[in-house]
Image (cartoon, rainbow, N blue to C red; front, side):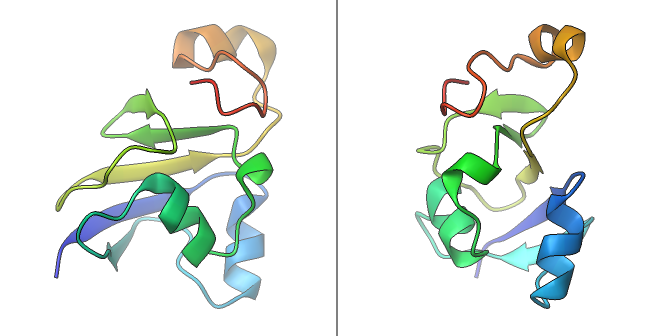
Length: 97
């Protein structure tokens, strides 16, 4: 089964930890064809709880299909303003990456 390296940032870490789910630098199995949106659903995270998803260091839409070996990081809303542009985050909480 394919695996990804998964990391959540900020308040997402304690939320996932409280649910007994992986939260930081974890190897995680994914289903073939699974998208970022599907991963969020599996992690019990609402799309509005994630402002940006980074796949292999690049901001990616929630519709991105995950591949074996991908590095996936989830960033919650609230990233400071100047860093938003540098990170490639365009629309706050809107799924516009």
